[in-house]
Structure formats: C-alpha cells, structure tokens
Length: 354
Image (cartoon, rainbow, N blue to C red; front, side, top):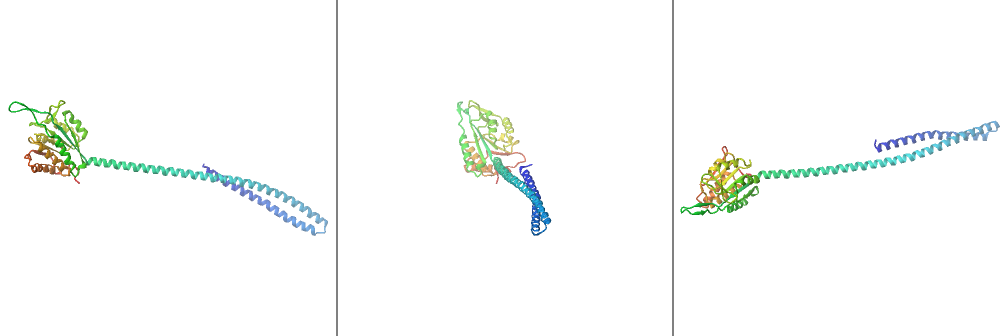
C-alpha cells in the first residue's frame, strides 16, 4: 500500500468520525433547546400563578430542566473538544496526504524524466547506430565499386653473350616510367576515385603471394622480362634473374583471391601464358612476341585510362591498340586479349558502368 492510499484512507476515517461526533452533538443541542423552552414556560407559569402548590411544582420543574440542560451543555462541550481534536488530526492527515501526493508527483515526474532521458539516449544511440550502419553500407558499397590494380615489377640484371662472344649487360626496362604513365592516365580518368593503383618493385618469386594477399587485386599487372618459352623473369635475393614457369604462374592465379578478374602480362612472349590463365579468371592480356618499352608504356597507359572511363574491356583493349597506331608504333599486333569461355569482352566492366 502506498503512502497516498494510506493517508487517503486515514482522512476519510477522520472525516467520518467528525461527522458522527457532530451528529451525536446535535442530540444534546436539542436537549438544551427543549430544556430552555420548558424553563421559560415554567417560569411564566410560576410568576402568574397564585397557587402555592403550582408555584412549587413549577419551581421543581425548573430545577430539573436546569439540571438536564447543564448535563447536556457539558456533553456539548465534550463533543466540541472531541471534534476540535479530530479536526486537528484531520488537518495533520490532510497535510501528510498533500505531502505524499507531492512526493508521488515528484517521483512520477522524476521517473518520467528518466524515461524521457533514457528514450532520448536510446534514440541517440539508434541514430548513431543508424549513421554507423549507413557509413558501413557506404564503405561496403564503395569497396564493392572500387577496384585494386596491383603493378608487379621485376627488372633484374641480365647478361647475354653477343655474336662476338662478349658478355653484355642488357639495358634495363623503363618500368618506373610505365608505372608513372599508368598512374597519371588513371588520375585523368572519369572513374579515378574508383581505382586504387598499387606498385611493388624488385619482386622476387617468393614475394608474389604476399603482395597479392596484401592488395587483393581486381587487376594483376606484371611488367618485366619474359622468355620465348613462356616464362616470366623475376629476381632472387642477389638481384639475379629467377624464372617463373608458366605452370607455376597458372597455379599462382588459381590460388589468388576470387576478386581477381584480369591479368595483364606486359612481358615479352607472354600470350601463351595468358591463354592458359583464362581457364580460371575472366580475362587476360599477353604479348605474342617481344615488345619494346615505348609500346608497353603506351599500350598499358591507354588501357587503364579507358578502363578508368568506365568502358568495357573490349573497348579499352581496342583503344589501347589504336593508341599504338596513333603513336606510329608498329607493334599493334603484339598485344592479345583472351577471355574465359562463355564470356564476351564487351560485357566485362571492371569499374561501374554508370
């Protein structure tokens, strides 16, 4: 039972008690009134009679009524005292009731405020969670729309014997220039924010899986030397050539992430490898003979520029070939595009088409 309920019950009880006391008091008030009337009447009769017996009788009556009146007045005084005490008690109970109601109101208001604060906090948390969810969705959406290009370069020192039997150091490839031209062409494209371009240099065979796992590429670009029998030239810890067989490269592609869609082998004699690779990915580009530095740079930079403008792989490859012709580089028949069975290059978009 709450304090309010208890005090309300007490107030009702006090009021009932006062009401009963007042009702009982009325009985004695009536007695006093009747006695006063009888005394008045007897007094008149006593004053007007000439009979001694009547006079005596009326005086006796007056005494009796005075006694009854006095007793009734005492009772009235007692009831007045009781009623006054009860009214004091009622006042105290009403004050307690009022305080209990105020306390309860304050408690309710406090609880309501706490509930509102909690609701506000919950709403704030919900809004924050919603905003975080939107951010995460946007990140996922952005991540889904964004592609990673991994440029893997290896340019070891290569010596060969010339026709006179002399040992000759082969000229270094211009791989840094190729990477720079590709990066600049991407930055000038419409979809530059959808493309991440990562480079790795002086790559050893043992580095390949590490680099692929780090970047999780959509496009894997190899740049360096290639041999006529379909091997790619990497380097060892001493900067000496280290050959990677076609079979090993195919296995490497098989073991790569499902995110990988295109492999570009900007190496000499790499088309034989590209043709094998498309058994496991959507597309691959390789070279059917040797390719010069300038041709490799022009072809690659235009290829990624066109991809960066949201063109299909078919159109991007065609524009890269046209670019060789525009620069009057007579190697436009060297790059070869291969796609997986059942897939058409015109339907391959590496960045979002919209």
